[in-house]
Length: 111
Length: 114
Image (cartoon, rainbow over all chains, first blue to last red):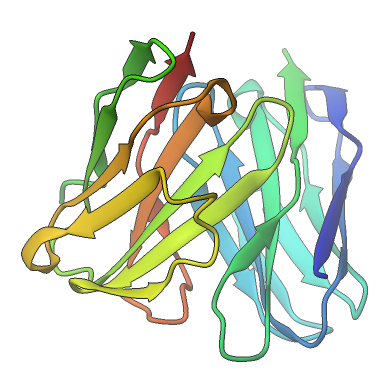
């Protein structure tokens, strides 16, 4: 069974204090790993898809990386508006396109 | 471009009642997904439509849940009769990609069954 574990559950940072969120996964052949951002009362907002180990993608202050066992979402010099829950999901190879989500990391950036 | 919309945003019903949730995907997106998040748990897949056809409904909890997608446009998810454990946030998402890459989520419907 596919599994996704995100850590930490919650993270508090000061504005400008860089850090990383972790997504560890177990899947029988990875088709894709997805990162989403979710603000309170809203649906997840797509950020990145990573397909193979070694791949990296960037968007503003966010950078996602992928290895064979985990993915990191690096946040450089965060701002208060980066506060949100960050979700990771994986999709296994095979006939099904069902994603398996982690429970997310709640990030709060203090000014 | 309008995003994915869901109606209602909140619903509070009594156990045994019926509730119908609606999702309007982004225009032109053939792929539509329903998910549910129970409090304290992760988002779980319910089913996937490609146009009006059910591609995968393996995540539907039981036969009290019925999903339809009329003419390949909007979709409804009916729960009848509702049970306490059906409470949660129901998300709809749509995608141009059949593989489910880059899904656009709606704001969700928060369902409370008393």
